[in-house]
Image (cartoon, rainbow, N blue to C red):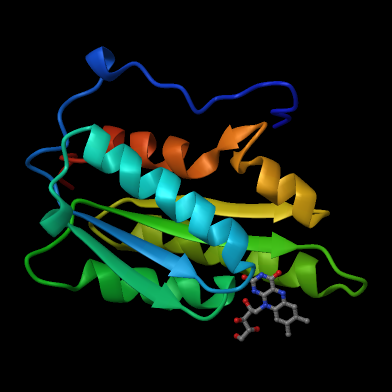
Length: 161
Ligand code: RBF
């Protein structure tokens, strides 16, 4: 899983389909907003760069990462439907066990959505020990995981179940 010393946020547009005809939802948690703003910008700008229309990108804000699960369910029921959902959050380890419980619950919840919803949910939830690590991955020296989430979302579009 280690991405230290790697920046995976560069993509080759010529190897990707156009996002022009697809609709996306970005569900964004407000906790650690500096980080989730950076991830959101990375994802949003990348979708536009890949051809998505601004009117085809729906944004849903939720309070914390724990609420991303419900927010993604909401996103899956909007009309006209979206082709992929990106869940953006940032969990930073504190002094208690809360981080472990919430991280597990969020990833478990998002996995469950991928088993039950007809639309793919892309997990862009950072789980770091320190804020600096998250900042480095949301537009810093280790790139922007939001960019990678947008590329992944496009790659998962149009796969009807
Ligand atoms: N939400 C996050 O997205 N990132 C966090 O780092 C985070 N830390 C939390 C720490 C504590 C002690 C608590 C109680 C909540 C935290 N939350 C965090 C909020 C959580 O995702 C959720 O919004 C609340 O638990 C309400 O369901």
